Amino acid sequence: MAIKYISTAFLTFTIVAGLAAVHPSQKVTEESGVSSRCWDYDAGLSPETGLVSDGQNLYFAAEGGRIASIETANGKSSWTADLGGRAISNVLVRELDVVAVTGAFDNSGRLNGSTLRSLSKATGIVNWSAPLTPSERYFLGATGSGIIAVSAEGSAGLFQPNGEDLIWKRPAAGKISAPPFVSEQNVIVSLASGKTQVLSTSDGTLRSNVSLAIPAVSQSVVREKLLISGDGRGNLVANELSSGSREWKFKAGAGWNYIRDTKYGVAAISADNFVYMISPDRGSIVWKRRLPGRISGAPAFSDSFTVIAAYGENTAYVIELQTGRITNLVSLPEKSSFAESPILISDGSVAAVTNSGVTLWSFNGCGTNKKAALNVPPR
Image (cartoon, rainbow, N blue to C red; front, side, top):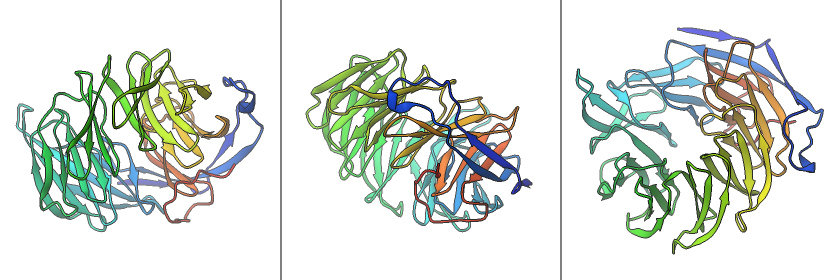
């Protein structure tokens, strides 16, 4: 297990002029900040899922159905749980546990079963497990009522917080076309048929059906009123959540990889490297910015900023949501690159999967471990 500590290696955050600016308020400034790279973690465990964090620890699924926990303060391994098979869902972090779905496969690679498991955040020991309808992919979400699990075949269910009972379940509706969206009120399931189901989180009833000409590949709910759907041909469509009626449509030059509601509008990322802020009321552009590479993974968002990286590039960008200004850059050494966009750990640190492992940077000095809060680093 190799953990390298680099408390003296500082990465300078420099603002680079010449990046595409499309609005006067987006002029790149000469402001700069300094961060320190606190540690690198490389224990031969290659993350197969994105990183998640509760502020105190990082969690991810690795090869062989292993779930790993790393202490954010020092980069040391907290525990590794070997569940066998292969992780087939995102890792879900809750107050006392982490939850994931693993699949059991025979020697020919055929799926034999899928199991939902809860692990202690302190030890990695399994608290409980529950069988699921076999599927090669599950998507998990947490609500106050319990754990939402949606399969690649479009089945959905709500488990009690302790996993003992299945509160409701809906049968497979068809192959899904986008990662489901889960909130306290709604579960959004987009299907390859072009239909999008809006389900009640509390009891699983069908609240509405939204019909799209082209299946959605990304989606989000905005202010619990609008369903925003992005397809692979550049169409961004807003439908009224309860009735399904179309409110507006926006057209871009490429498909949509990610959509997110923010207090400044709808943040949307297209496959041609653009980041947009769209007005939820009219579907008009508030600002847009083009980055030099294809944006990877799900970007980290705070109330006021987002941290975005391009796959295979060695720079991540801190972008102000109100104006689209790039306020800081996170730079890796030469020959290093991001595999996913960084995640925010606390009010002064970010972590990311790179081609050499997992790395954490701090804006407030290494060793500080404040409570989790999605506040972006100071400029």
